[in-house]
Each structure stands twice: as C-alpha cells, then as structure tokens.
Length: 364
Picture 1: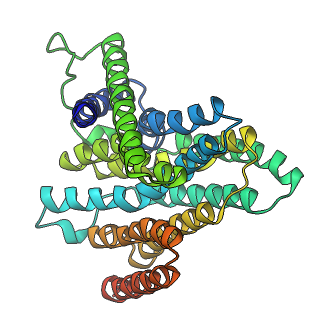
Picture 2: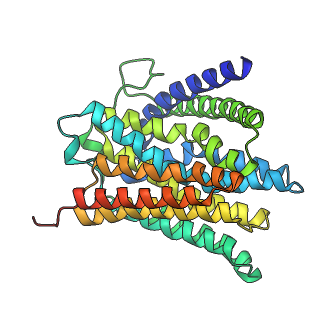
C-alpha cells in the first residue's frame, strides 16, 4: 500500500512540476531572446533530462563493484531514449488527436530544420555509443567519450546560432505562476519557479523510481529489464508531460524539440559518462534494445523525409516497437525464441503497412 501511495504522490509531483517548468522555461527563453529551437532542444531538454540521468549515473557511481548495479545503469542509459522514441511519441500523437482532432491529420507544426538536426545528431551519437559497447577495442573505449562530448558541443553551438525557427514573437506566453503583479515578471521570479519545478520533477521521479524498483523486485524481474523497461517509465514523464502541455497550447515546435533535444543529450553526454565509468560491454539484450531504438528513430525520421511532415499516425504506430522489448525478456527467460521472431515479423509487417498507407510522394 505504501508503495502504491508513494508512486501516486510521485506522479502528482511530476505532473505539477511539469506544468510549472514549461511555464518558467518559456519566460526564461523570452528573457534571453532565444529561438524555439534553443528553448526546446537545449533549455527544456536539459532540465527535464535530470531525473533519468541521475538514476543510471547514481547506480554506476555507488555500485561499481556490483554487476547488477552496472546493468541497471547501462539499462537506464539505453532505455531512456528508447522509451522517448516509442511511447513518448505515442503520447504526443494522442495529445494532438485530443487537442486538435479536426487538424490532426495535417501533422505537427514543427520546425523542420530543428527536427532534422536533432534526429541526425541523436542517431549518430547513439550508434557510436552502441559501437563502443559492441567492439572490445581499448582505444575506441577511450576515444568515444571525448567524441560524444564534442558531438554534443557541436549540436549545442549549431542550435544556439540557428534563428531560422525563432517564433517566440509570434506566440503568446502565459503569465508566470509566481508572478506577483500584472507587469512582466522579473528574472529572479522566473528562476525561482524554475528551481521549484525541477525540485518537484526530480523528487517525484525519485519516488516513482523507488516504487517501480520495489515492484520489480516483488515480480522478480532481471535488473537490466527493470532499468530498461520500468525505470524510464517513471523518469521520462517530465519530457512527455511537458510536451503535452505545449501541444495543448499549440506550440508543437517546443513540444517536439523538448523530446528530440533530450534524446540528443541522452545519446551523447550520458553514454559518455557510462563508457568512462564502466567496462561498457553491452550484452545481447542491451544491443537488442539499441537496435530497436535506432529502428524506431529511423522509421520516424524516414517518414518525415518522405512525407515532408510528421503525422500523429506515424508517431503512434512506431510505438509498437516498444512491445518487442518485454517480449524479448520473456523469450529469454522462458526459452521461447520463436515467439520473439514471430513478434518481430508482425511488427515489421505492420510498419510496412503504415509506410504504404501514409507515404505520399512530394509534389503530389
């Protein structure tokens, strides 16, 4: 009973914190005259990525001599982007359908250049991280963390200098919740609300994570499966909930940048820490998770390039890939490889049908 109450209270903290955070980060971007690309892909993404970053890094730092804690850390690192690119996109699609049912088929009103940049940096960084874990090469293990840090620095610089998607002047910013007068809020008030929201998000995510870990122990789930399947469900709530808030307000560019920017962060700086602090030898389950993540991201990005837009149907259907990970866990535990192969074939056929149904040649 206490576990359930802690999880419910943690969820409420994350929900309220996400609302405060999106409001504060918009005002901070307005104070600093940032474009929506920098606002969503850097400020919002970095702030809301703190909970899922803290879990694996803490597990690695305080359990370096334990193989189980290292598995939890690696699973958290690989599982966070996997959840965002599957269930995170599904939640965005549902939010779009509910908030704008008549115009949902037109797709999200995103900044195309920003989305192209974010997805390119994410898939490249994530692939490099997987390569370092698949190849037992000493010099590669030493060089990749620095390469990933440099890759994120390039992304950071390109995003800050790009003003092509600056729509801040065209959208109305809601009043700050901690605004004490009708005048424009001061920078200290914005920063105070920002810190309060981050404290709520991190505290709520910690309660959720603790509850999920206790639940997994009760169910006797393997450590890697816990970290890659259950922990991200709690810690990734900030990105998805912030994006729901922005979609509801008609700010699709901020919503998408919030998720894709977090994906870039989680495929570069976070794996760099993991590679530097662990042997980073990825198991078959870890490589399978990474392959599914790249497949899901590649499908969404490929459909975006083919259609020239991003529809909620594509974001929703790609989430079926998420189901393959628990299926792989069950197949490994009970020696049912045939079920995994059958599930993979069904998912491939389904996505092929989506490709045929959704694709419309450019200029048609």
